[in-house]
Structure formats: structure tokens, C-alpha cells
Amino acid sequence: MKTCFVHEYLIDYGGAEQVLKGLLGLWPDSPIFTLVYDSNGNCKDIIQSTQVIGSFLNKVPFSKKKYRLYLPLMPLAIEQFDLSGYDIVISASHAIAKGVITGPDQLHIGYIHTPIRYAWDMQQEYLSKAGLERGVRGYFTRLLLHYMRIWDMRTVAGVDHYIANSHFVARRIMKLYKREATVIHPPVELDRFSVGEKKENFYVTVSRLVPYKKVDLIVRAFNQLPNKKLVVIGDGPELNYLKKIADSNITFLGFQSDRVIEDTLQRAKAFVYAAQEDFGIVPVEAQACGTPVIAYGKGGALETVVPGQTGQFFYEQKEEALIESVEIFEGSPPFNPFDIRKNVERFGKARFEREMRTFVEEKAKDYFGKLD
Image (cartoon, rainbow, N blue to C red; front, side):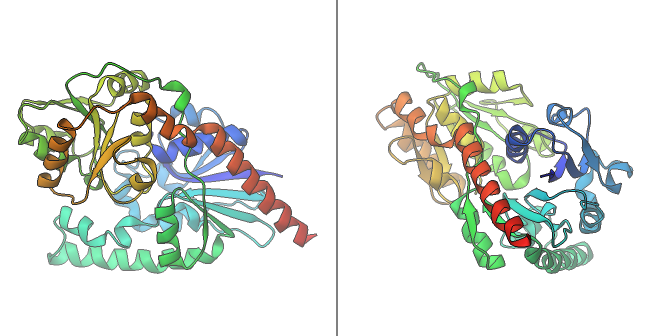
């Protein structure tokens, strides 16, 4: 049967793109339909592996750099794709992708990274962070998000079967869409990570530098811990701002290769993460290096970090809570790096491929058997 993938955008390489790469490992000749893609960007390896079809947004000015500005047009753009030549459509969605239109003779499986955060339960946080709580711009932004919620609910019935990347996301899908979702955790390329036994005297965080990742919270906390070194790896719109507020004990490396990330994770005393993640691949990668994780105790981290064995949690997204957690960590006995590694063996690529292939084949057999 002919299969295709639908993906929001191929601009930066992150967790969603890692899932897409895993899907292409199963169905390598399947084309990717995406709103916007940059053939020279960080996703070029994925793009070069198969055919990529962009929407009309891919041709509009500045779409590769300012694609978020075109959010009002994204529902229209995703609905214009002609997928009629495919039997199985697998959308990987954190906002728009699941809204593609399919027919009664097509099976649509939606792998959901998250329902649209900024339109649903995190709306107030996004508005506050962007300074859009009041005023004319704030009013029109709220109006846009209201429209996005209506459109998002319209798309729910178009997905035949839902997959969630974590139990946390499965609960959000049930809360918002009233649909059950099977949990298949993302594939983590554990084989490219090895345990680092000798830890050095610094902490590290690896993240896209966007507001909801809360890297600013980590930076502000370590500003108050002048004797603790922090290394920040990642790029994004907040990079310059974070550099301005950071003290001399904090080092920014920007975007780095997989090899540099692995080496830094292996040597770090601990990995720090302050976001409420839907799953969180990088904390798993840190543990694959035998490095303990200090994470915000909500969301996907609760499914990957074992407190007291592979890391610890702080339960408020406040500088004081993170500082207290770092100080507790400093006074605790050292963690066994091999026990930490053992904890995340359950998130490997082979497990993802096995679960995903079984799910799709079973649903396809059932769906197309009924059509016959």
C-alpha cells in the first residue's frame, strides 16, 4: 500500500524530526508533505532521503525564517494537499499536520506530539511571554487562537487512529478531543551514545531557545549560583536575549553537531531541564550518557526520569525551586552512570520501529479488510 507522511515544517532538527526520521526508516520511499521546508537547513539529511512536497507557504517571502508569522494561513495550506494517491496517511503533528483532508478509502493515523499548546492549555503563558495580554495586538491574537481552536476541533474526526508520544499527551488528547490514543514513545538513537564515567564540574542544558523551553529560568537560576558552571547548547530566537542576561559562569555554544552534544553530555555533572515537555528526547539522551537529570517534575519527564536513581525533580517553574534542587543534588551521593543508562534502554529505536510497524499493519488490515 502507498504511504505518505505529513509533517508541519522541516526547518530545524528536533524531537519531531527525529520521529519523522524513525518513520522513514520503516517506510523509506514514502514522500513527505510539509508546510515549509529549507533544503539547506538542519533537516537536509531527512529531506534528501525522499521526495518532499511543500505547501504554497514555501514560496511566500521569508517563510523559511519567519514561518510562525504565517500561522493564520497554515490551516488553509495544510488542507490544499492532494493526498488522494495514497492508501495510508501518517501525520506527525504538534499543531497543524493532522488537519490534512483524507477520503473514506484512506487510513489516517495521527502521531500527536501535542495538541496545539498555544491555543489550548498554555494560551495564557504564551500571551504573557509575548506581551500580548492587553491591547489591540493582544485582542487580535486571542481572536486568532479562538479560530485555531475551532479549526483544531474540526480536524479531530479526520484522524482514524491516534498515537501519543507519551501518557501525558494521551491524557491531553482525551481531555481535549475525547479520543483514546495508543502511547508509542519516540525513537531515541541510543546506539550513538555511550556512558561517560568521569564527570566534570559543570551542568548542561540542550534545547531550542524558544520561550516555552524555559531556558531563561535556568539561566537566571545559575546567575544566582556563581560558583556553578552552566553550558547552554542550542539556537533559537531567544539566544541573544539569554546572552544579555547571563553572568560569566554561563557559556553559550549555539547550535552544535551530534558529536559535540554527546561529548558534552558525557562529561557534564548533570543535565538541567525546566520545560514542561510532552515527552522530552534530550533528557533521555543525557541519561543514555550516564548523566543524571534535574528536571521540572511534570509532563513527559515523569515517564523517563526515576527520582533518586537517574535524577531528581523540582516542582515549580521558579528560580528558587531549581536552585534548591541543584543544592540538594550537590549534597547527594553520586548516581551510578550505568544504572542511569539502563533506565532508558526501553526508549530505543528498535522498540519504536517494532511498535509502530505492528500498530500500522494491524490498523491497515482491519480498516481495508472492512472496505473489502
